[in-house]
Image 1 (cartoon, rainbow, N blue to C red):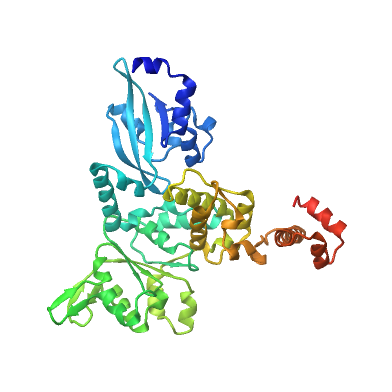
Image 2: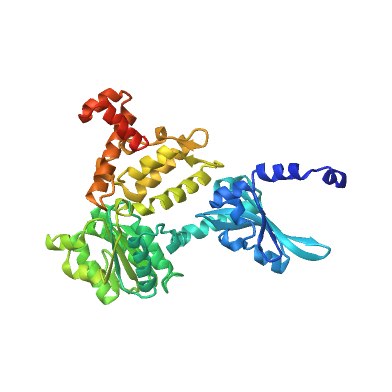
Length: 447
């Protein structure tokens, strides 16, 4: 072994560390990074030259390298939550002549699907984590999971931090696909009820005739037993009523009584029970408009909207798009077990110009499919759905001076025509300009 190590050149060692199916980091006794391989840097979205010398905590979230250095105890197959997923990490103290001089860390497996191939010890660890997720699904979502730095998103996050510790009801309004449920989870996670149940009922997903039993429980005449409804299951915790606009008027009255009295009558029974819940509700349509149309009770509306969060559609916060693209791309790359996938420049431009009627949910679906369709680790425009490649003409930014807007419209129109038509004479005729003028504009816009 000693002979082998002596004959192992630095270049060969570097090649091994760079190409092994693991991510490596080495820190000194002060937890500053001495070495990190390129694959790990790509995943973390940092430049290696910038990472070297930095405290490891500034580069790797939730790192525990400093604990290993302090205790001298290795962490083997330790679950590490990073970038939205659990991974397995080894952290080992580096000891020279009886003194800890640093630590070595490696990430072995990139996603939970790979854990099924591990030993029974690791499988048990995975099962415990998954069970905890299932029993406490709200722990999957934190305020930090709400991506974006636009003014609208920052304001919502600030509001959540202020109202979360209280018990006041919150109404979350926004188009379908804007991520209203994540905002609800975040409120609960930051509240005093965070260790209690987070229970969700989707009023639009349950048939109206079954919704009362779903919410308030059922009395079984055959057995004489009560089954707890969602309202009772959320006792001491938070009840998230998703798409409350679909709640029938008769049940709106019962919900209002439950909120006012702090009690519920189980469906088909006369048993009254005390229940302490915090209500969070969501709607993809304006409840205020439904109140005016007599389709939603005014008294219930005022009861549940002490605070209203208006979640903007993605097309109104396109400054957040790059962050969302990078976040979801990395997430789906890890889930797919791929080592590296990037967006082609043209693909990113198409995604940035699309108007996203399905909002963040549509963005996730498009990227997830594109990751599996990608060839040679690059997502080309061909991997995108037709409706995305067509791009809505109204997707350009309307902020700014009219002259700048018109220039952007002209550039976009010419670019779209060039993508669908190779004959420039035909394009010029369609636009009503000469070919020489078209060539000038192509040069002007670098198309």
